[in-house]
Length: 270
Image (cartoon, rainbow, N blue to C red; front, side):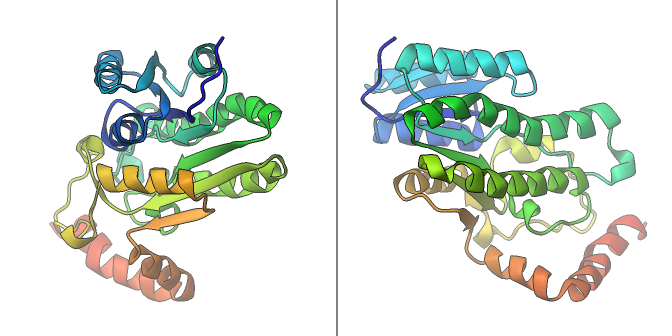
């Protein structure tokens, strides 16, 4: 085992979207040592080859974060290759946005909760002893504005992201004494293939306005800034903070507005 002189980052969900963009930014532009984790091995390998061809270091590891054995193998592979783990970016996850009674109980509910919250918890738990031993580290959890403001058809996804928010806050207060930072990221809509797998069908056509929609590269840049300057909580883009506080201060008005602008037109109007 050799100990890397560079910052070593594990990125879950690295085969596409935010994870892929973050890997390129950290591995190619900023020369971090990367451990790339996802289920799609071919895409991981292609990304690792691209990073190494540019002079970086990237280790692809086939990982399903809903399987404990895969998580343990991921951590062991990272330590065997680089000798340390400086940053864990818990990015893997997916969403199914339908009315609750229309969701498949296994594919849409059980697996979504396992990937989005249990995967975050178990991967963090596997990494944490090594960060405690080295008395440093940074855990970055990808949440969502849906973990701050819950809306119809997001019931399970929001539940998972509210759970990530609570886990992130509690963990920060557990591990700060060892110089381990914990950050939650709460983005609004992001233009990635994530949307293609949500099952979203809107009669109203309502979606995130283009001016507020983020790119995967926007989130990658935010992750880099967070690594450089750790923060407890990052909400993107900044206008989403207004939505968050409005929901806290005027919940009745938010309920009425969503019901009349979205729920009634979507559910009752044929």
